[in-house]
Length: 340
Ligand SMILES: [Zn+2]
Image 1 (cartoon, rainbow, N blue to C red):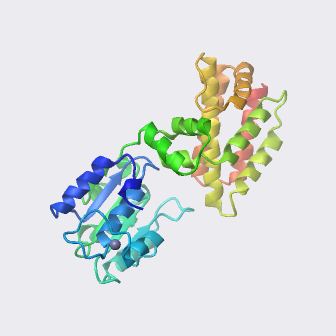
Image 2: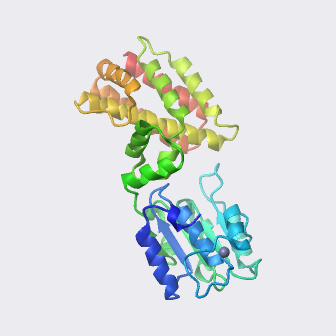
Image 3: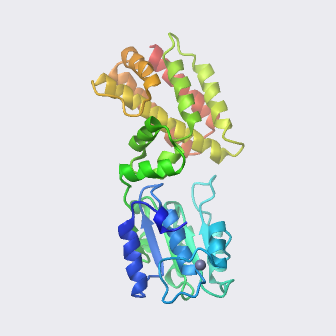
């Protein structure tokens, strides 16, 4: 890894280069920007530069990529680089986790140099979890660096905001998203363009939706919705099975369902576009007849109601309700709306 692999944030890289050159790096930063635009990659690269043990002087933003410290960062096992995130199955950060982090971060650096922490998901810090590490944020060990990652400045607690320097990360250009998708081995030009359109400038989102099985199952659902009589029970069962294929962990299943709901929402949004006389944004050519048939079958208001039901389901999945009930309920409502 090096800065050359980070696309679309050249101005931010320059800013940090200058801060380091003038020895003006702050001890805590809040990186704010949409999910999947590269905040974490940026933070890890910055951490590596700070922890690099090559004999370069003065310290620069470029890690040597060869010393033991650099190799440990690349392997994700550097003892002085803390990467903390919210446990996937919880709504919020547990206070104990933050207390433990504060305690460990205050100990002497294992490699005798400095410590860096990257705290992800800080949108989900509640007041007590935040309070339990405010002192660390205010007076971290000398030379250490804390990087907090956030997607939404509005939900950040004032006590956090006031103790960090804020750095904003913008969505990437379509061309940068395209380049990153190609680098990740996606070759199908049609798929790349669909993903670019759906990504909102976030390569992370685009990559999450690049999974062929999502598109295949979307087609299964659309075919089900275009049958003379929608078999909601069968579709519900298939949706649950599709979720379970993600693995035993509930967090994995929820993530897969959310990705599928995203694609489903996009397809019904396309149906509305077709009804309004414009062209579909997310559909591959094989899906167009299915979308056209749905546009014929249900009026604008019904499709709107279906969309709302899908959006509501996203919220239910986020609230950790039982997945099978949520999905069977969704298929039941959609079947009723389409058959009416
Ligand atoms: Zn190094």
